[in-house]
Image (cartoon, rainbow, N blue to C red; front, side):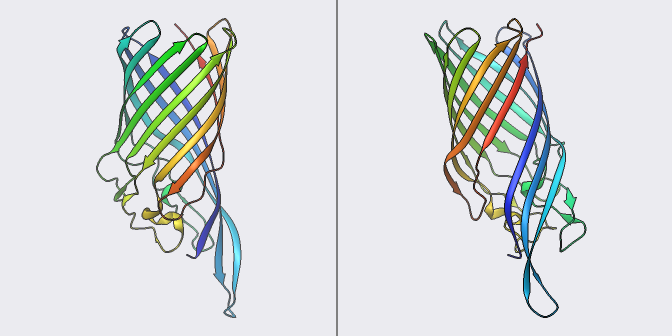
Length: 262
């Protein structure tokens, strides 16, 4: 490869809204704004035939795909409930982002640097939650199925996720949580004809997907007379097995504010 990725950072800002028209049905709408930066090293050939290494960076930013869906209650008991999850991802995020590189002034960025999938993606699954005294627990399984090919002649691999968590309430206002998340994703199908898979590892569709196991610790705080909830979580991978060549994941931080209007 002429170019080797060194590090990548992604920031995602998500605005979500939920509305329950009935006791069993909750409608969900989510829109995110994504910022991606990648540091890379290129091996450049000089006029005298010698090679030199040159560091550079690429970036992309903008709105991601829109997610619309719902939750439907299947079982509702005093200390346990089960609901079905269903969402559709509408491909409004950009998949043709470009940036300057040492080899080209306006190069098409690889798959990992694009902002959306370019396909309509369906996520189906279920969530089981319960309480035992001051302890709450949950188990969620989700399956994301990609449909068709996008306008750049590829689609991301199907994604299967299993989440489990437990939380302990110290009071009505504060709790701590521990979460384990496992995921399996297949490689990209098809290929963007503008990307040279021999140029950089992230341009090869075979280098995507794999299996991950993540652990995370979190805290939840109830604010503003029960209407506002602050949550923060820090997670890191416990096991990583990627298809082909890919950068290891290091750290993930999630911070959220949830406000109940009605």
